[in-house]
Image (tube, rainbow, N blue to C red; front, side, top):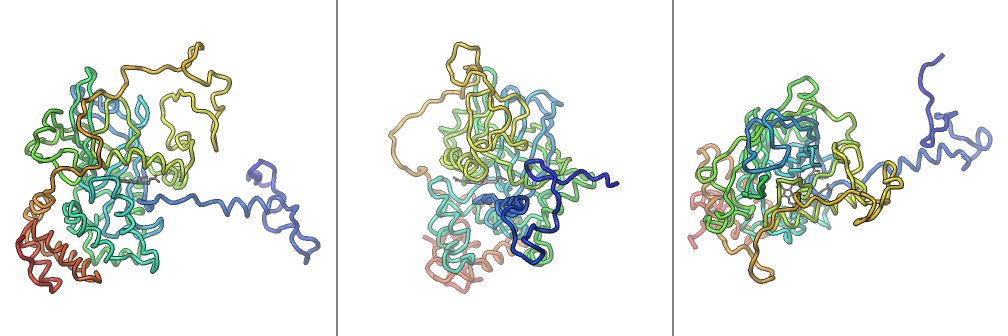
Length: 484
Ligand code: HEM
């Protein structure tokens, strides 16, 4: 006798026949009363949820964070307190522009999203493998991403749109330089650094704050793919990075990163030589050296991709006491965008799914909604304030107050030097690295259909460094840029 469990329908009834649908006579039409068939076909039709509007292709892993240095003078966040303490985490790496199923080895920033399951609730750092970003105001994000995605008519990637937008948004120059450098195509997810990119605020037990930036530095060393190898792999194994991560963890070769922070005293933000909340800029490590916090180790693969990776929801607004946001105009927009995307993509109760559910107790007055799990609060008190001893706010966990001033207005950052840091990066590169950077840019810009766009972009490279601009102009067969 078979020891297999009985196959059941989703309502738990045993299935009598899973090979043949029920028909009227052996050659007759199929019967609507075959409810198992109907359920099977209908559920299959609903297997897809919307893919992430960006960062659709990704891979995830479980692991832990271990504190290695006492930073309690800067933050009361429990995840970063108590040397030796371990907190479980889940990470998702991704590319940005491609669809779910696109190649892993394209030139693109890589997402680096970490969810720490802390004692005080979940804390997400939703960063990239680059310390800066292309734009610095959330209002430009949908336009920027339109240029990275497919053309509405041809359904092809559109280099003219990409470089048109970048050339008209020179704040992108620093990130474009990183993207076009060797680091634009990491060898694997294991061989890249990760950054929180934005400025955040850490707050300690005494309510004192400091501005901080996160740096995850890979212990595997930084390694990149040459464009030729990346192109070959894109054809041979589009899931190259996904496979590499899974196999490394499967065979016990657990990847590891060290987490550091740069810490800036609050008052320095008023006098630093540029706006420290501008996400197109890095803070000098001479001014604000890296301070070690701990180590992140990935040691367990997901058991089910959809349940753990596709349904994972990360948001820069998933914060815990000890970490507040900064006025960075990109970060502020992201505080809306992610949870909104999650409600659409996964559902209003996405935080109840096992991968997103905090490991500490959740007590609140949210009730009902689609796909509500558990007992929905049972008969417990369902409003607040109440006289029935329901969960109550804890004033000590409020975000730290800070002073603001000025006029409510739509204004830009008041500083427009998009060139110094991009140029500094160019000047840091070796001759071989510069040659490859220029070649990558020339290849990427060649298909741009409008000469004025190319000329405008070359001017930006020239302003970053005359040699940089000149070499690209030469590569594209354009007139040499004049100093402006
Ligand atoms: C994913 C919006 C900037 C890193 C997403 C998603 C949205 C979004 C809607 C999909 C979320 C989901 O469906 O779960 C935005 C907006 C931005 C912005 C509006 C600017 C205002 C950034 C920046 C970074 C970043 C600056 C990195 C520093 C990521 C990552 C993911 C993501 C890593 C994938 C998260 C995952 O693995 O689930 N973004 N984004 N984004 N974004 Fe952004």
